[in-house]
Length: 445
Image (cartoon, rainbow, N blue to C red):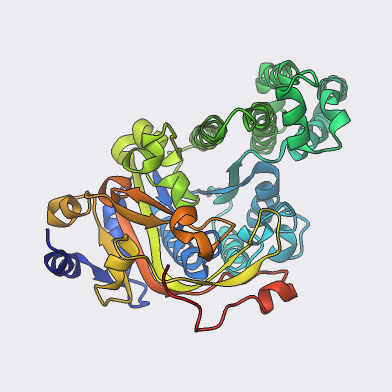
């Protein structure tokens, strides 16, 4: 289809976002009775992506009975925020509840948009009837090897001190690595240290064998506490394998990580089901994890992701929504572990979805794709798609941040916001305040 004809088709199908509370009515109609809604993002540092995901999620919780938000964060860090949202924390406010997020990049969850959402979630839960299920906030990722080990031991110290002693003995396998997970992975994969695989597997199995006993100690509270301990033990097992796999190649470690996140999502849904009614979960992660990998270069090179696994397991019961932007600013680092900077985002490259959507002349819009038709067919032709993670390198943007994708096979709907701004940190440093490039920053390669 010629570009001018395609633009005409897209303009007819696009639903402008005006800032009205009814903007997402068509999306909620598309979601219907689905149990899982995946809300992606094209960067980890764009305010509008977080704000719009929050707005959609609030409606899903309030109007469609969703009871969990699962995010691209580590389980123990997110669980502190979960306790605050559900009124079971000693944190004075959402800022304090998010203080557990100390690992790079802290801005992914310690930002003003997440703080506002967490305060809304707490207020919503407090407004519910006592017997009504509250909505929670959970992490899906697996980087918190040592933090999860500490959480398992702390739980067992409370409910079964002899079992806690056994757990300490098993997890002592990691003590020589100074809480450096990558150091452990390198040493174990190179044969310079014994693998701790047997220890983490044994601990998970031991915990699961006592599941009924632990979960019945004090009703629903005990069941919830056991569940979080089991997830930490499962995380420790999977993280141990992940850190060894890091040194075998990208595909192996990537697939392990996304399989862990999908496994944790399944466990969360099953846990919510046991508490009564169908568990319904909103997932917040990067597009690279939630856009169906089979429709991208990732799938062609052997990588899978959460979006693919969820679609394979839940079919039409899952709805997948992507977010894109053309230009603006973004919070990102220049290197892994570096300082957060406010960087200017170059305009989308020619031949990209971002440039195509910019050419429509509609600043903000929702584009439904699930029902097929002319729009979906036209967007099955591969184009470039941009992905900015926690690192943004404009000087190598084509190779660092673009990949080919078939958008209509990747998502059920897309939200495009033409110009966006950098995510605002709760902990601003001078690097962020002064990091924005001037308006004369080059706009193309």
